Image 1 (tube, helix red, strand yellow):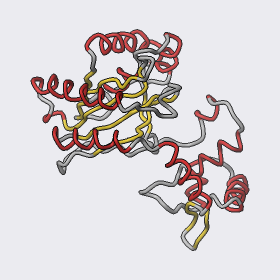
Image 2 (image 1 turned 135 degrees about the vertical axis):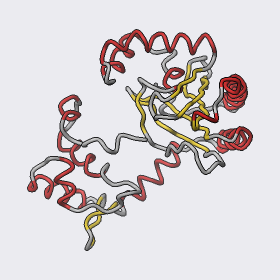
Image 3 (image 1 turned 180 degrees about the vertical axis):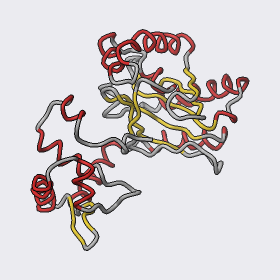
Image 4 (image 1 turned 90 degrees about the vertical axis):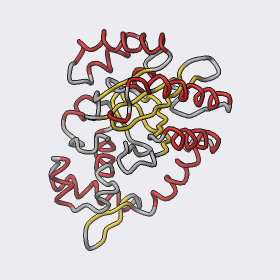
Length: 264
């Protein structure tokens, strides 16, 4: 459910600012995931579209830094990432009390519960509790999804400026023409107190989301319930929204804070 299938280089490199060699190095690291823990030099070259000599230099630098590790099959995550992973977990993992509220909600309602925060034109999953059903919606912590679709996006955009909405719209297939609809979705979610989406991002998926607010009253995160659309009949949505709102209230009272949620 992330952008892992997108070619790392190419258009994005033209649209983004930053140091090109650093971006290319991280594009290589981002090719690794649970489904592909080891990658060959040829696969890196094919995926990035870079010259083999450039890939060799980048891979050698990453290996010398301990960020990649070579074996007979190719390249995998290096030992230096252990330190980064430990540090990231200590800074980004949500409080245990928040996880308990989410787990209780998933057990009671039988669907997957996700907590999203906004980052630029994306929303990032920072916590999730899976549905007990074999057929369920799965989002991994750290996965990015676009802010131009989905119930959680509609909630997270409540306090967004028109210029930001325009940037988000430009990242969508519809382009700038979507700006007005994003504004309408955000206004409707603010008025109702929750948002609903069906097949907007994943076909056959329905989600209900409510805001999690910080001390100033601004939206810092979205709490959502998602699953196959046939398990979200119209008459159940109101009940789901009520349950989510109560869970969000508990999380707010616990003083929910998150590095991404504080910046939007």
